[in-house]
Image 1 (cartoon, rainbow, N blue to C red):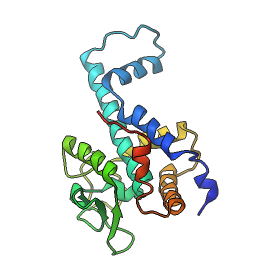
Image 2 (cartoon, rainbow, N blue to C red; image 1 turned 45 degrees about the horizontal axis):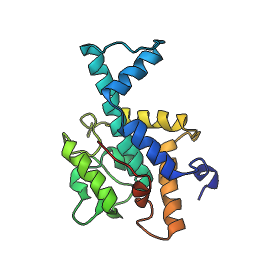
Image 3 (cartoon, rainbow, N blue to C red; image 1 turned 120 degrees about the horizontal axis):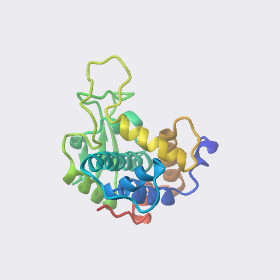
Length: 209
């Protein structure tokens, strides 16, 4: 295990709590204010118009999806490609596990089927995501390019948003999403329990509106 890589995440609970507030908690109002300040505007923030509503809503939605990537990487140890192509049909809420396997739009590194156990709090969060889902993928994005030879992530905007956010939190790794997976492995080893990482959700006291 690369201790230098793991040391970048000093406290996973704090990171998750920050993600719940700043990513999952993003709203049209908070993003409108952020955009205004980024453009050099001063208080008070002007009343939002329809065009600004659309822009702010897109930014908030992207952050919501970025939070999903954060949780799936840090609390389930999934790889970037596994997160990007994860289907709701791979999430077994009744038996509390996620199945990583080959699908019509994803080929894992090996032909083996892997089950990732998740606890009740993780299941609760997934249920909330599922009720708001508009398609078959857990993380919203574009239509996958199944026959494309190029490297393609259908939820690339969510991944990019999270990478930017993680860098702002002090992670300097070239592939910060891989850092989440490594931290998951570290937590599981430390706790000697397959449910150890997903318990971070409960400890972070995450509430999703």
